[in-house]
Picture 1: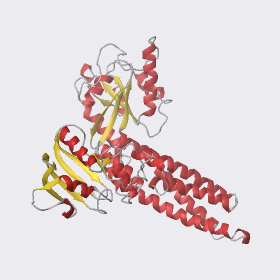
Picture 2 (picture 1 turned 90 degrees about the vertical axis):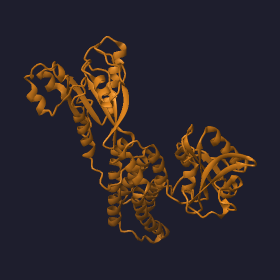
Picture 3 (picture 1 turned 135 degrees about the vertical axis):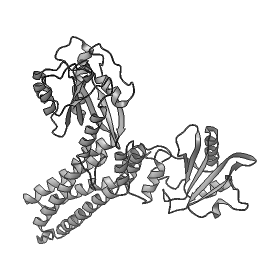
Picture 4 (picture 1 turned 120 degrees about the vertical axis):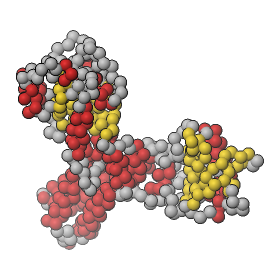
Length: 469
């Protein structure tokens, strides 16, 4: 992608913007300086005497897409004139019937007339290059397209509207003012003057560093909203973990058997409720001793999934558990649950097999146990309600949340540079060394919004987009 990000931005590009395959309609997008003249060659309006070049911006027109005497399809052509379009260039969108032949034929004719096929993300890349939005907003477009829940949709939409960008740009502006004063001191280095009050510099750096730290700490929440909350289902063999997974997903996703140790590897699937996507992970049963090599590997992977999970459902058979086991439940897994924000839910299963109330029921109530019958799908909703609350407790409000790994790493680099600058001021090191740290922080902040970028970065980001976006 590096070869065309900047050098070919004046080409006229085209692509299918709806998913490939047969459907009711398809939309083909054409963008660039020749978009209107090229589409004018083939579009014949039902209104006699009118041409695409005469159409007003943001209007739709019904007609035929023709090549000579060949009528390809009845279409609706929508025109968006620059600069008031998604890319900032002239855009034509052709809505045709969803035949694969029609799609391909229209694209062939557009390319023969001088357009070229768009590369992945090239429409959004042009929007960025034309100043329609910054780089972090462009990345939010891809997140919006791939969002699978209301929470991830809201987060992507907020970032696309520029709330996150505005905070980053304001911090960068403050640092630029700071850097300017330091650079001015360097120009008068021989006169030993200070234009930047060192105490105020320390305070400003401290405020910005604190704000950046808050953004960095929001990444764990933003990441689970974007990708789904990972929930590990753990417990001893044959307590009903696979049955619970099937009940949560409301489908037969995992094999259920009376034979202990049936699940040898983790099984994952997602379920969305209350606008939040949960990624449930059914794991191999945990037991102290096993001679089965494959089961041993499965148990090892279970512990890996426990560390990765944001929430853990510890499932046990209510009819067989003992008081001693209850006391050891959390102690047994403290080495694997080292994150204080990791939620641990106790699930007592097989209430359908319970003949009488067990003597240890009070202890289970004290541990806020959820009692279910996975086999009969009883009280499964209580698990989902509790999980939703674990996410809701991290109330986002209007705060900016980081969900992009690239942004997260740039923020960490910024924090490190600011810490070095603060330490340098404290130790009264030369101004030119402090200025280097401030420039470094500015560089990493600029990478987030695209004020500092390279074609390699652009290629890596937009290469992950779909072709028609």
